[in-house]
Image (cartoon, rainbow, N blue to C red; front, side, top):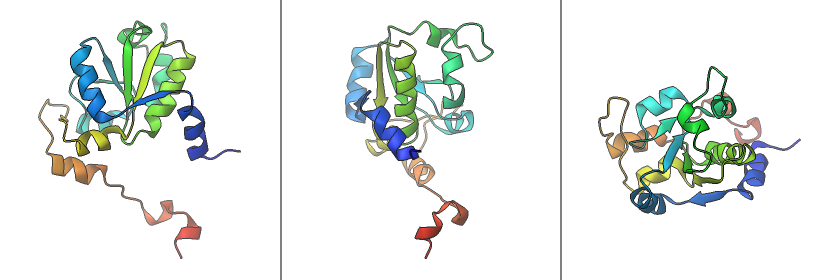
Length: 157
């Protein structure tokens, strides 16, 4: 059995990553670039990169194919487009980018450091109403908040 971080590292060796400052340049250079946010809908509604598309990680593979309730036509037709996958911290996006590559997507990259890094680089985030999210509010949102029962018992002592 492997652990989550090992699964992440195994996928990381097969995919490309991009830093937030480089993504700013890619967005300017390629207006056809697809920003694919794989967080859950409630996360996306709270804040996301303007112009990004939300397809939660849990339905990604079926959203990439025709004839499923989750099918996203823009994504199905994007196999040759440049795609940058984003999530909160860069873990889910690596796993999603790996899946996309297995499904035949040709130009997939994961946003290293995720939206946390995007916010740290002071790039804009907006909510579902299209309103800009305050950087300090985003900092608070991206701060991990573990419940006591989520902490490894070996580390609680």
